[in-house]
Length: 258
Image 1 (cartoon, rainbow, N blue to C red):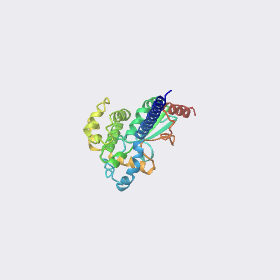
Image 2: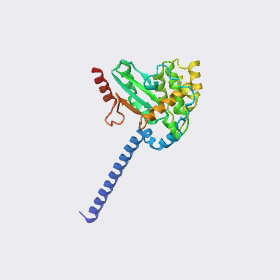
Image 3: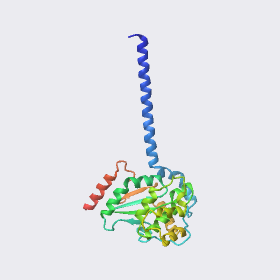
Image 4: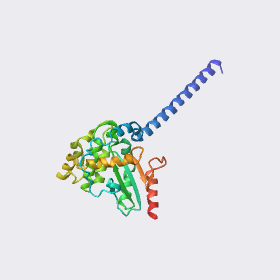
């Protein structure tokens, strides 16, 4: 083989090695972006702690100065949770979430069908705590107003259905679309029988605004690191990288055996 041919093959191999290295780097970057997107509401907390501290007592679109009016059937310490499922369920999931949080939407879309199945079968009850992390960090009122509207849906016995609609129709994190009462009421039209004069008035008057502020205050006092925070019988499972809907289902089934 001539020296020229050997040089050409060596150059080709080097180009191939460089191209493979580029592909590996691109794949690592792609995975990093996926992971980063999934925890955006957690990482964002570090930059908003100062804002939250500086605005203690001010809570996005929630008016903490008014009387605290819990939604119907509120449970938990200080009545700051909305429970879905049967009280007799053998396992409890506690979820702290923000309707503007993309990571919360990702969790609900991935685990929602399993949670619905388990609550429907009486094996699991879920305590939802609604917070306003994005309002405090980015400004706006969408987290608080959506949480108030969800509490209004709870009054009508339709929290779970409206909860799903809000996450299915979540705007971009930087878009404060949920601040508009008309938008929240329009979305309520996707839930049969939810839009009534009572619901409309509850949303427009901010009936549960102070309750939402109280719920967010409980989130801060709990020392949680971001949203969503998901606790299974008190243990944080959202940080478990091996967690899957199927694994959660097995954990719930095991808890119900006892």
